[in-house]
Length: 88
Image (cartoon, rainbow, N blue to C red):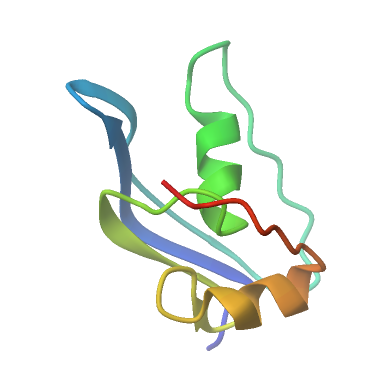
């Protein structure tokens, strides 16, 4: 099955600070999915990785079957996001 969003061990670190630590989840096509948590839980960082605005430190993520690192342009086309900023 192809998911709308698929993550495996998705991690993002900034130096010694781990903002997102190995999260795994799947979102089915047509499903309503909420990403909830307290301030500093890594919600915005996760969304930025899924939108290709940040490159994951470890793990993988796919949006509509496209890898957010290797196929970032295709991901942006699918979600309607285009950013010329340098990804970190």
